[in-house]
Amino acid sequence: ARDVITLIASYTLMTLVLTDQRAASVMKNTNSEPTCMKPEGKLYDSLDDIHLKLRYIFDGEECTTVLVKPERVDETFPDRISCIKMCNPGQDTTSCTNRPPGACRKDKGQDVNPLTCETIYSRFEDPYVAYYYNTTVGKCTPYCVCEEPEDRDDTTNYYLSDSFCDFECGGYKEFKAQVAQSKRSAS
Image 1: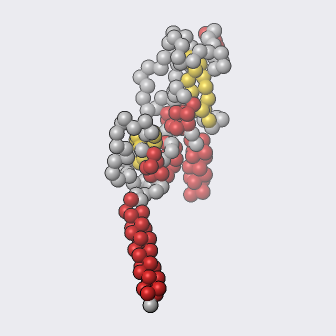
Image 2: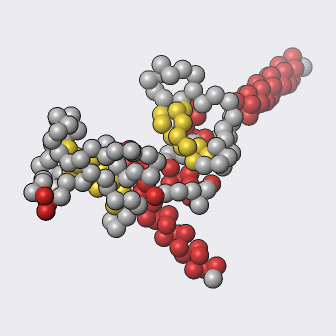
Image 3: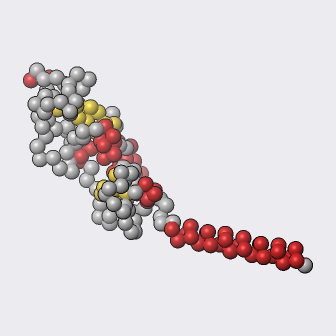
């Protein structure tokens, strides 16, 4: 009888532990994948956290950048186009289609080869490499900048790194092709 009581007590205790763990898991599990709803609560605790990631969320009106702690990245979008595609297909994407500003010109005798013009860390009077989203090839492309772009805003197709260009415009060509296909199918 003693063994039966021990067995029942062990089973009951294990059930309580598993139930408690499941409840704790459900309670702490905010949405585990991005949605078109703004994530609840604070996405980070301190700007001093060196592990914060720059990501996109849909804030109810548009896709916008946010800083987020690593354990909440699954609730955000990895880039702007994936957010726009899912939540706001009509959002302005001209920053991915406009001509790259301040590009060097061969007809002015300027260096147009990104392999030979200087890096951004050289003197600003010299040409330097920046990136723009090239809609023809569907990827970010380096180019030489000879004139510092003025009045940069959200529509400027100018990025200081390939990775930030991808963050803003990667996937644009495929997204626009899907939109065009949807329109043709609806007709």
